Amino acid sequence: MAGPHRWPRAEPPAPSDAALVARLFKRDADALGELYDRYARPVYGLARRVTGDDGFAQDVVQDVFLALWKDPDRYAAGRGGFASWLLSVTHHKAVDAVRREESSRKRRAQATEQFVTEHVERTVDDNAWTTLRGERVRAALRKLPEPQREALVLAYFGGYTQREVATLTDTPLGTVKTRMLTGMRRLRDLLGTIADGGAQ
Image: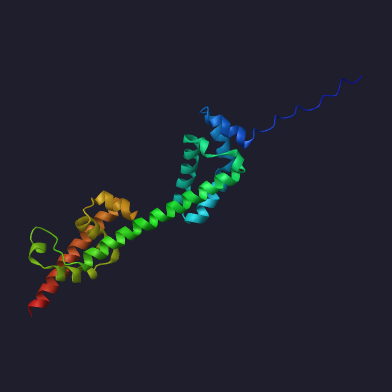
């Protein structure tokens, strides 16, 4: 005679989003991990569409879940579903990331333009820049390739270190050093040519 039929044991239902958020108040890292597993992909997808950049999108994902971990009280269940709230936060942070990058680019561009257009004297080496007036410098700078001019302007006008210039322009430090060295040599040649032409 056959033994009694045994039904397969049912898996316990997955905890709701609200339940997982409630566990965050108790600093339950596993709850955050479960929320991350559920929503990291759509959060990344939205951030990627807004920023257009993989690196920025990854930063946004990290910011979103870190903010949730630090302050789970920001989510109020009465205001709607957790998923829609989380994507709203993601969109806000992604837009902020884009704005910060645009602002940084504008500041760099303005620093370059200000240096080129204003009447200034800066030292290229120990004596060249002290003997040549600003108009000659501006004319020479305009002849440099944009990456070289930007690096020199940020360093000599903006007062940034080479490492800071690399960070501001999102460029490897070695490339910045090469641009500055090449730009300095080219600038000296140009200043000499301008000075000779002006003397004729």
